[in-house]
Length: 146
Ligand SMILES: Nc1ncnc2c1ncn2[C@@H]1O[C@H](COP(=O)(O)OP(=O)(O)O)[C@@H](O)[C@H]1O
Ligand SMILES: [Mg+2]
Image 1 (cartoon, rainbow, N blue to C red):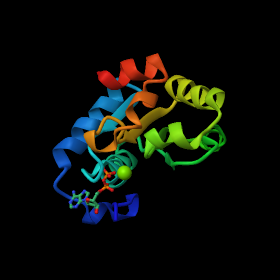
Image 2: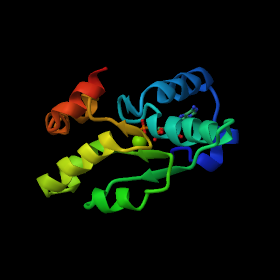
Image 3: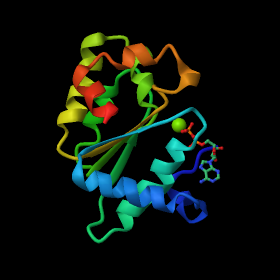
Image 4: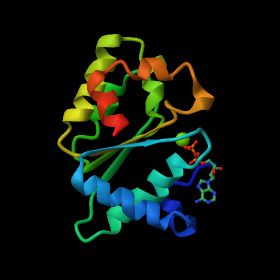
């Protein structure tokens, strides 16, 4: 089971990575956390990055959204958050069947005024099949490659 924000006191061993990611979110509004399934991405963001930002000097409010058929509706409900976490980002592609909505979701995330941390296994060798579709937005693939 992955670690959640409320488990942050039990989550350890990723301190340097958490600081590095928090720093990256200061410089760039969009952070992509990509790696093989089971490598700890969800836990890192949920129990590491989110609590660290909430504890910070300028404490921020985070909203976590997850897989679903209508990601745009979920995103609309996070209007007031300073950080939007999109966990299992790659699932937007198979789950949201409307291509227009999918693209609108990705574009809106990239243009979002709050910060976004998207966690995804889409480039993992273990989850082939999802990778080609995740490149559906050229702007997104440019950002993810960084
Ligand atoms: N820092 C850590 N220390 C020990 N176990 C961890 C750590 N981070 C993640 N795990 C465990 O590894 C497994 C996979 O974590 P998860 O966050 O779901 O990975 P991913 O999102 O990359 O698939 C879970 O059982 C989780 O509890
Ligand atoms: Mg995960």
